[in-house]
Image (cartoon, rainbow, N blue to C red):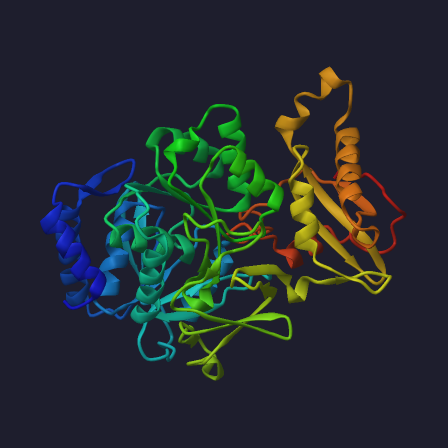
Length: 480
């Protein structure tokens, strides 16, 4: 076996055989035991004659063992995101040509044979098909090679340098490429203990307290929860070595709150089509507020007509789209710029840009970040256009409302005050003109968030079409 990550695991199995490699609520494997388990699974997979295996399991030791065995056997691994709907999962399995899906029943692995009509052609060298639903909810398979994966791992390892971390907690599903590569593969590359626990966001703070990890990959929403728990004394800022942030825009004011608490917050940027991370803030460097860091050593980044374009570690292509195979560069669809020191800033999605009735371009992610920086607002989705004044759909923060009776204010009054405060910081052309309070939070379960915490705008707009059309009068406040 000449896979470079396999060789790394061999070295750890010799140098630190009794050090914990993987831990979940049911079991624990040392590095020596992990290597043995992977070797056993590789033999089983080789004897199976399979080519493509789908993993449909919760975060667990078995998920990682299966994934590593497939990678080292140069077989195709197809992670199934647990937050996909049943229909999306069905389409994923059919689209990829998966021959078998590995699931868990009462913590016991179960192999379910499939009968694909055919094995669709894949770009040469494909070892992983990662499905990203993006903003539309329609699964799209991105084909990656071992080289793609290792380039990202080694580039991140180089950027982290000598930072001291011993334990990483996976808070995203392992089927999310960011956690799979920047979490598990990087953690094992560096000899960490990887904690595989419940990914329900309601339990994340409790897991952080229980396992005391030095490393975690967080969405902006989770960052806010970590900040709040630290301010309340539930978490200790000094226990963290790296809190890597990605998936959506992070407001500079949130960065400032983290800095005041001495939380080691580092923003990054990437996409599945570039094998996850392309930019990351280096620990020890004072990056300007709002930056996602400098490009990693494996990424060449350019701004073309205002759009971020990447070269150097591009995907192999999309399943069922030969015209996409072996691209030289990836047009990301993100507006951005690079300052004189080489720090990258992401300004929003091209397709999300709103054109106001006054002809000004406004990024809704900017306004959403401003709104959710207030303690009264947990989530926000902003819409607008030439015939629609800027309109916000808001999910109130329940804990913030708990103080309302003492203040003798209603939740609507709190939200109205919060919006007024936000508008006071915005230029007139970007101010919120209408807003509606909604009762159901956006989530991956109801298909209104992607796996990395981004708003699925098409799904939100479709569900709340009666609120984000131009017929409504100015500034209504409607409970739905």
